Image (cartoon, rainbow, N blue to C red; front, side, top):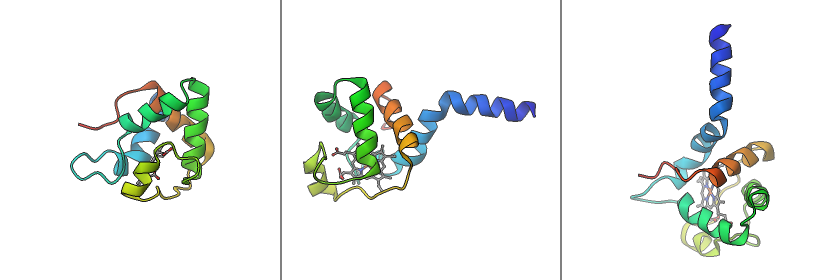
Length: 110
Ligand code: HEC
């Protein structure tokens, strides 16, 4: 029980980060043979369009819940890599992940 409580508090402290690494880095983290743009680049484009934290998070979460060409901020990336597949992750989780991206600059790219 104590272990469980410890595990839970560890998880919630690092929740957003774990969700980000678990779901997004497979495609976005590869440097030598990238199959998707890296998050430093994506974040740059979103920061220009949505400098406000709330807008940034809401719009990124919304796009990832429904990848499409019409509302993409990086249309050139779609030409280069093809449209990102739909991942079937709920909007709450995507909001946590977008919060991680907004608040951090460590995207596991070395
Ligand atoms: C199966 C591979 C794959 C996974 C997994 C993946 N992506 Fe992507 N993503 C792509 C590709 C390819 C692109 C570039 C083409 C495009 O924009 O559709 C992209 C583009 C994006 C963009 C740019 C959208 C825009 O406005 O142009 C965002 C934001 C993004 N991904 C977020 C995420 C997040 C957050 C996760 C984790 C929940 C994730 N991706 C997981 C492949 C992936």
